[in-house]
Image 1: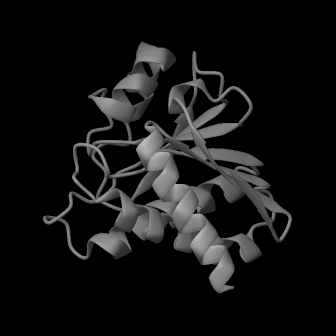
Image 2 (image 1 turned 180 degrees about the horizontal axis):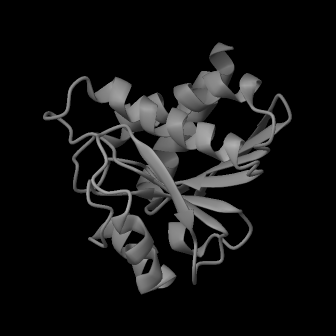
Image 3 (image 1 turned 45 degrees about the vertical axis):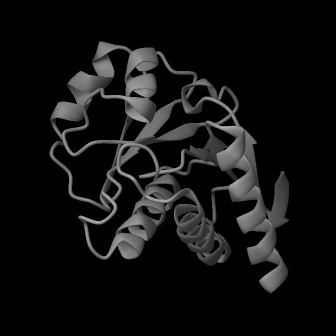
Length: 179
């Protein structure tokens, strides 16, 4: 599913965030220490190689909502933006922190003149954020920021499961209809 909003393509696809060959930057749903782990962080670090973990050390730890950028190393992407999403029920207010992840990642993308970026469903795995609520926060935030974007022309949400993909598609369609 894709929509063009103010010359920015927003799309939702099923796939592997570490295998997005046609975007300049991918986003890592990172842990505070920016280390390899499970899920998205594990997949990205595994494919990028040990140099990624080495570069990440100088930025760690980060706080919930923060974002930092590194090279992509062995990934097909030039850059990785690492965001620490909120742990649902622990980091408050969850919606503001999650929104900050997307906002800060797009701010960095603009600073680096990145034209294409792919996001995972930040905080929905081990951090327990309900997928529908996370999709609403992520997509609302992105839609609010789009009019201010100068360089970013493609924003992709890469969902790991068909179920999550359907939720993101429904939320996106609903938000577009509201406008």
